[in-house]
Image (cartoon, rainbow, N blue to C red; front, side, top):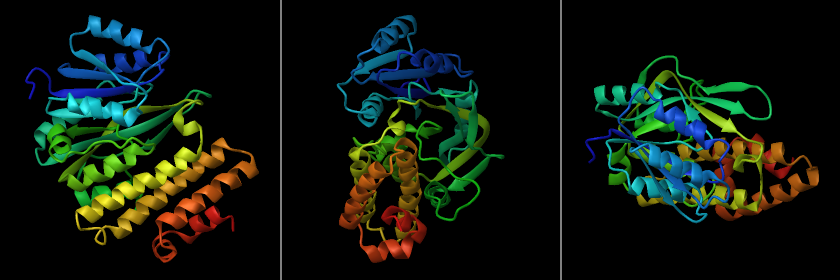
Length: 318
């Protein structure tokens, strides 16, 4: 364990030369200073790597690694492998974070040794128009157990407070990730898998008010495009979660939670589809593809029992 730094910030980067400096400045200027920054450039073809190298030369607490188009999940895994601090967090290279957020979270985790994760709010920022939206906010500091955290993540009970599957608005005890070998899959929706497994292993989680991750939505980002890979990766991610629970011999204990998470994520996937693709024929093509995967991966009776019938009707176009 590195005594010089208490927190590692892992940044996957790919072709983000317009935004990465804003991200780095928000971390460098944090009110907590004993931070180590690991940047993993995933084969950028713009000037991102030049900017990263410039900052690495200027700041001793920044190091970088390179990979060849393996995706953000694999890039984060490289960061995890090279993390040797007590706490770790992740942030995408086009996002930024409130200047007191890391100090607030680390201080709370230091005072609450039973807590494994600190969760802050998310403010969505849009590049196409001057607007921001507070999507996840917490009015008070609350310590919750693993089961409630999973309920808020999966939206099992439709509470007013929820937890996002995004990994960037959370600070984690590194040993929770390393000891349980929690890594990111090489797919879209990699956050969904990582967060479910992590909350499964966590003992307690603390919700932190008045601090935000600024989640930047670009028109050309992954979540503003759609392809068959989104569908295949979506089902692969839930197959991963199901296999994990079956290996832990507890799938039936978590079955309702699993399908609640599937339903929540299914809504998100369909929202992306209908936002990106305005052509009804293209929408229909992707919905047919979705149906094939649905029929292949799930028993219809299980879906009817556990998933809102309106979601199924929307997929089938009823």
